[in-house]
Length: 173
Image 1 (spheres, rainbow, N blue to C red):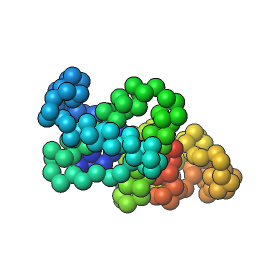
Image 2: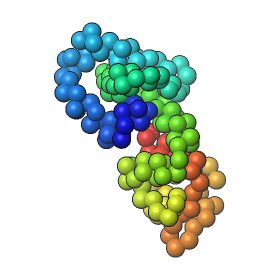
Image 3: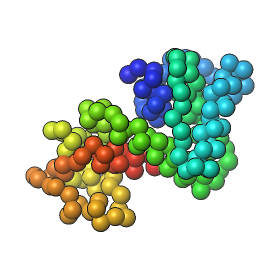
Image 4: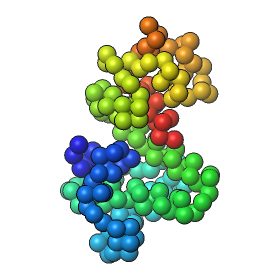
């Protein structure tokens, strides 16, 4: 995975690997002037979650921008955890999930499918998932998402890309 994809989806394992490979200590991330941009972006992520209910997509003009965006994600999570508010934790998670969804619906089917697999959702034959994965991840508040209203064949639920992206969004919350 390239660094720009990792910056767009900083919750993925590959993004965590970018952070590990940099071999930067928590102390450096929190205090070194080199990571000020990442700290600012981390604060911005939290503020946007509170104020708008959605985290923005940040400009990654070069690899340094992308790396700072990747680092901003764990910084934001540290801020949220440090505040210790269940409401903020929930609001922040939802804001990140909404941002991921808005990016995922613009990706190709194969990418969305591979993203689903990262969250343990087995995808086969295009965009079909097994009904148990569907039940674990589907929003439960809407008639549209009830299993009885979905195309089901031999235990497999056929989805559109936006529907699979929505299941990933639910998983991120």
